[in-house]
Length: 553
Ligand code: NG1
Ligand code: ZN
Image (cartoon, rainbow, N blue to C red; front, side, top):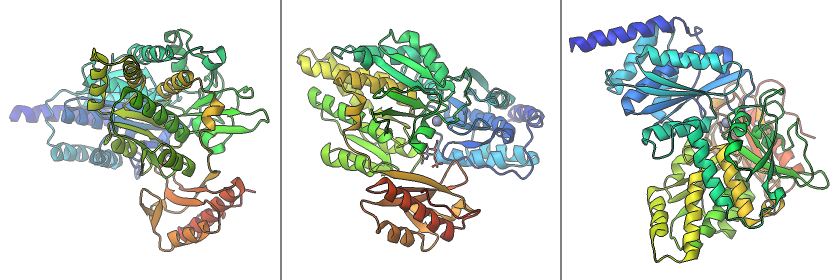
């Protein structure tokens, strides 16, 4: 007992020593939100050090390797952020998100107390080993900030492995591989490329007469880590996919007028992109966990294929394979309130698929998707993946191993297996989603226009409203209805009634200090007008600050 006490105080002396090198600005309060901590990079040094400490505790508690990713995804270059990755590559639990916030906000002199509090509450055995994997995006601030994470880990006696520049999904993959003793794949970046690309090449062999046009894709790398990693991956693709890479980071600014978020929200092509009519294009976000597709028609009109269109393509493909394989597995598509109403209607009414709606934030979608044999989840913004239950994977394997299984069934089962291998089940992954989408389009001999024509999106608009305190808005029903402030939902309902095929909802953002407004209606003019009217309602009833929202036209 005494020895443990000495050991503990020795460990904490290192924490004290190193934490003074990463002081917290007094009074600063930050919240572990939907995507971890995210704000201006200058405010994050102490947060990084402390997340190194917390990841070490989490590793001791779970007896597994934990990941820490330094990135602010689609936010501007000046921002940064940090997110913890749990043993199977998933997001940390809500309780630990709470600890992250407590630890982050403890004043310098209270840090040790906050740390000991977590150790006591979770009954953490401090003599256990700990291992933390660290990765970072290409932001100027990321190298120094990830160094602070590493110091946090070592000052609590944890071991760390610095993966350096990796995409967010690559780090999730590494953590999962490590904690499954390599069953999920090799714990290296090359292991990641090998697994995904080999599955992609096997899938693409099922595409008859694949033309050069079909094999060509224009990619906007958002001037971020995704561009770097696609370059690295190319040699594994054996020319089965030919990528023209734009916004590769060689001169443009990260996420500036490019990337998946820009394309989705602005509904236009990124800058730095030469786009020919009809050409299939896609954009990654700054840490390559989101992807959207698009093309311009002969009239120069822009067409977006977002996460909803991606979920539709993938779930249709999987449903067809399940039928061909004669496998009775339950499958659902999981969306959020931001999913276009047309996509939900198409999936439910035409495809006869189960559709679930959850709160915004991938962890919510991920959890619901886990309840099915096959759960396809995508946010409209292009973050998503597919989850297969252990029993689904086993049934597919049994079919492949069954000597009495006919050729058509076996072919479908092999396609399903390679589909599983091309997918990064730990988290939404732009690279993996891209390979899967490209394989499906090639196998089906489908153009981007044919894919787009599956259903027509309802015109929609997203706006932001600044309010004094966005927490005054509380929501229910997967964020589709506001329960406070009083009168807000009634006013939204009354406004929506004035438009055709209309829907609108508001919610406080988890990553920005704004209230988000979403509206859809039968025409773009109506969607824009509705979004503006609802913005005004929010401004007036939820404590708007600054100028009143102006009409879009
Ligand atoms: P917030 O800021 O809570 O709306 C945004 C996205 C989420 C999710 C997170 C994390 C929208 C409307 N919201 O969250 O879907 O991706 O960022 O990056 O796209
Ligand atoms: Zn991202």
